[in-house]
Structure formats: structure tokens, C-alpha cells
Length: 442
Figure 1 (cartoon, rainbow, N blue to C red):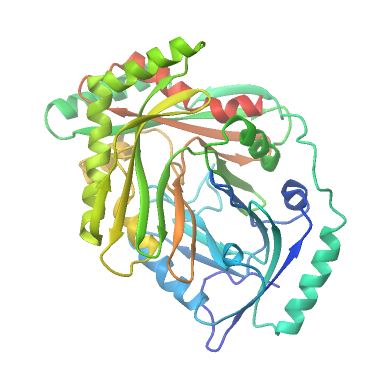
Figure 2: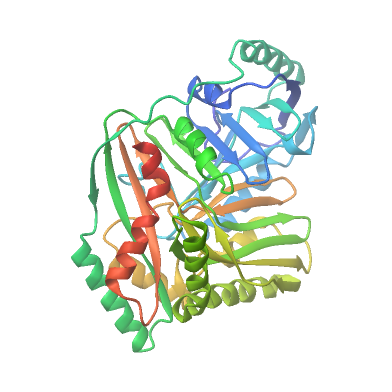
């Protein structure tokens, strides 16, 4: 079943999917034996998907990439013949977008256009109670797809139910793409723009190049992150064998089901304490910091403002502290009821980038980021997720993430800069953002 690369289906073309229940199997063992594109997606509420191959690829570039993906996806879902399975196994397109509209693929982002989504040929889906195998094809008869399903089911029966996580690849060397002194100067320039009124806030990021002792097996790294960060998303999008983008982001950008939107403001961070008492003390310091509250409230207000043109109602819940294994964040849950039928990509476009990863005003912040940062963000801090034929979907923010190629991984981390930001404090805080993945690589 060759991949269809441009997302355009010929007249009369039909997508055929067949699903059956299977015994539980190691998703990592499945991915290890499958070619690119490879996809892994799991959410804090338990849905887990591993997939391989491409029935259809939808790609786009430039400022209209959200609309272009949406239009081309309509062709993909125009005619669907599906049988078996449940709502959890329905056909979905998985992928993401670049942070900047001007993004052009290049190292370390070779193979990553401005947007790409894949409808997989083979997909495993695990819910709280069941595991399913789905096979999809284009312009094949249902009988052919049923036969492929039966053959793959027999093949999967040979895979183990569990697979050892294996050793970490080990870190040989690391290099900051931006030296600490240069970072300090970037922060000082940003705070000067804020004091003169050009900006309210900007998120500046840096990258850490990691040379490994051995090639990284990303599914194994994600499995280790399951133990360390069970409250986070985990994803892998590997468009080609050259490398993949993966991570364990704590932040949901948007979930849309019907007309119900769930999102959140997640901004402002501090370390965890070594004792419960110290942990509570740090959490209290985070919640009472004027600088952090200002930054966080800007994010929450901007998300609310982005939703209001699309929504009948928007509800901003009370602020609280979200605790992860090595870091604590201020979190404000936000929900909305849309004023009509909207595609999740319309909501994604309205919210990206949130001030938690971009800044305010949005266009000036993006311009400042492009002028200041010394590396290409690529898909870092961008929407990563899936959507279906109804326009429902779920996207995380691609932070706590890295892009890999063989024995090299580039990790990313950023911090919100406001008027009274101290360069040394910001540098120390941004190092925490590398640790979730760096610790698992070591």
C-alpha cells in the first residue's frame, strides 16, 4: 500500500478501514519492526496509539497551512468505508505544524515541512480495557483489506506482550547552541523592548545539542517517560527514517469534541522540593510571585480572547499549581462551548502560539523570536496531535521535546520574559526544561 503523499484523493477514491480486537501486545515491539512514518500518541487519560505507514500524507507550508491541511483532509475523509472497532479506533490524521509560518526544512528538521499529517496504514489502539488492530487502505477492495488485517493479526500474535525497556543510549557530550552570556544579552534586549512598550512578554528558547553513545530508540525513551511523567502526553512523529520529533509535554493546547473545547493556561514554573515541606514552600512562592502571576494571567487572558470569537461561552477556572516530577507550574483550566460547528484546526489556529510559548502582542513576539533566537524552532512549541472526519481532535503543545537523528538529539527549552526578568534566573530555570528527556537519555 504505497503512501499517497499530497493528500489529494482522486475522484471516486475511497478510504477503507477494518478493525479487530487483539490480545494485548507491546507497542514498542510493534514500532521497532515497522518502517517510517511511525507515530506514537498517548494522553494522560489513557488512550494509547502506535501506528506505521501512510495511506495519505497531507502537507502544507506558509501562513495558510492550517486552512490547507483542513481542506485537503476533507478529500481524505470524503468517502470512508469502515467496519469493526469502536469510537477510539476511528480513522484519524496524526501530525503537527511548524512554529513559524516561514519555516523551511533543514538540519535538524530535515523532512519536516510547515505542516504534515499522516493517516496510518497500520494502527494499534489501546484503551483502558481493550487493544485493537486497524488496517486502512485507499482504492482497495474491502476483501483485500480484510485479508491484510487477518495476516497482520497473525503476525502480531508472534510479538511479546511486554518488551524490556532496554538501556538508555547514554550521553557522550552536550552543547548549548546559545552560550549563557549570549542568552543573557538576548534577555536584556527583550526586557528593554518590554520597558519601551514594544512588547508585554516574549518567550525566548534555546537548544541543547546532545551527542549520544548509541543511537536512540525513541519508543524506549518514551516508555521510560511513562514512569517519570505519567501526567503528561507522550508523542512521536517520525515522517522519514532520517529522524523523528518526540516529547512528553505537560500542556494541552486544545481538545474539541462536538462543540466542547477544553484547554488550559500553563505558564510560570519553579523546581520541586526535596521534602514535602520544601515542595509546598516552593509552590507557595510560585503562586505568590508577582512576576509569575503577571506572566500567567497574560496567557490565560489571551487564550480566553482567542476563544471568544468562536464561542458561545468561555469559562476560566481557578488558578492552581500543577506538579510534575521535576517542576511545578501554575495552571488555569479553560473550557468553552462553541457557537457552531468548528473544525479543531480552526481553534488550533486561533490559539497558536499561546503567550506561554510565544508572547504578546503575538506578531511582535514572533518577530522578536525570529530576530533573537540563534536556532530554528522547527516544530518545537507547536501544535502536535490528531483530528478526525468530524473535525474533532486533540493537540498538545510540543514542548519538553527533542528532534533526533541516529546518535544525536536536539532538545529545546524556553522561558517567558517580562519586564523584571533576571537573565541568570531565567537561564537556571530554562535548564529544568531539558531534564525530562535528558535524564532518560543518560
